Length: 185
Image (cartoon, rainbow, N blue to C red):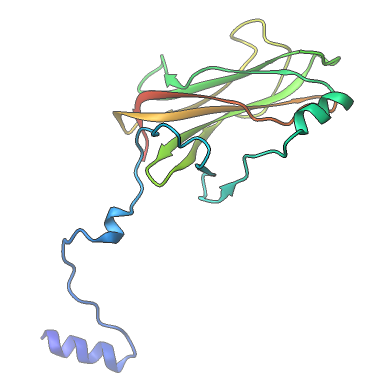
């Protein structure tokens, strides 16, 4: 029966695959999984968006200083990624303080990234962009949150972006990193 099936597949121009076997080969060893980021990986890791595309996360040297000469420097606030108080989820917040900016409103959002063993930070959740006044309490912040698949310790980063309305401001996207008992696949 098997040879008849193979002959039919070849006659139709198909390729007959060998029966599946449970063998751990190099392809399986290279499958990336979430985990704890090793020391020294910060400078070499790449960022991937939710569709798997690379996100450029570097800015040219001197950009912050150059922008400060012609614009303003807000303080970008963010907390460590942490287990949410509302359930088994990872959470992170973003906010801002006015710094030397004139305007008292900014568009703020934050995103959570999970570390994978292929030395990538993968985007798992982003807040909506909110127009916020400078931070004075918990109501003046954004929140990114994602439910956990299990509670294994995993490295997470919370990045925040602040764009002061009507002013040129610095373009950095600072983060806080923390190991959290939350893993998302």
